[in-house]
Image (cartoon, rainbow, N blue to C red; front, top):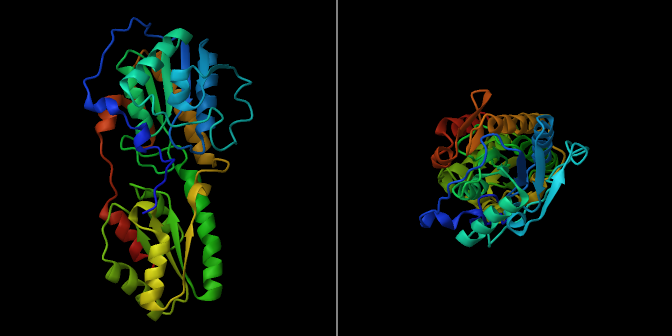
Length: 352
């Protein structure tokens, strides 16, 4: 099974502090911060730059100082920090990736590393930290919050798998990128009476594969949340499509549900249908963010600063029922999110 080494939930970003009793420090920081640090962590996602921009300009508008932390938590404990102003974030809204960069940090993934990051916040006078990333990033935020640094998390991951929010920055762009690629692959599959097996990102979550599969009319969608009978749900399904008069087929698979190469080989061996695998890989992470990702990132960035200015600490920004709310960090990390069978069945029914 293919692994996405840059995935935000990678072990390197997950805290080792969960297995130890956290050291808590009584912090005398003011309820209203004077200096805000902002960093991006985990896998990059289109729209991160828009969130940094919104945090920076909102904070500056309220007379606060803003420090950008480069290379995520790795840069935080090393003091790789620069001051941001309104011009620092100009011409960033339309750019994919993150201009502050992101990196893994084995050092931060230890109690000593978190302590170093905390001490660096004191050195630079950071009163609060805005963390843009996924669950692994939020666990890192929780660790430093336990030492007394107030944090606010902004959800950003192309997998849309953060349990506390209905939407994450980068998801819409990734879906549109994958949809465009699959539409092109369908054109060539039609020309050659071929089955295209397309592997999308999603090591533990199938939201991207499910929604892209529905949007592109995939005959088969495979995701890690739902177990399938390969003979019935893949082979028989494709044969039913062929016998119904179809001459081309699309199979969308999340990387956590199998290998496109292996699945294509099995399909061709059993059915005789020519099957070609395509792994979209990191192309799904890149590119200019869509309007929705720019707008959501901007709104979340503004809201994150407002939360800090209200004196609230250790919150996750969440999009729920059409609006933004701030929920408790610890509670958010305990939430669970899953795909319903109804969503999966809907996609299956309309593809045949």
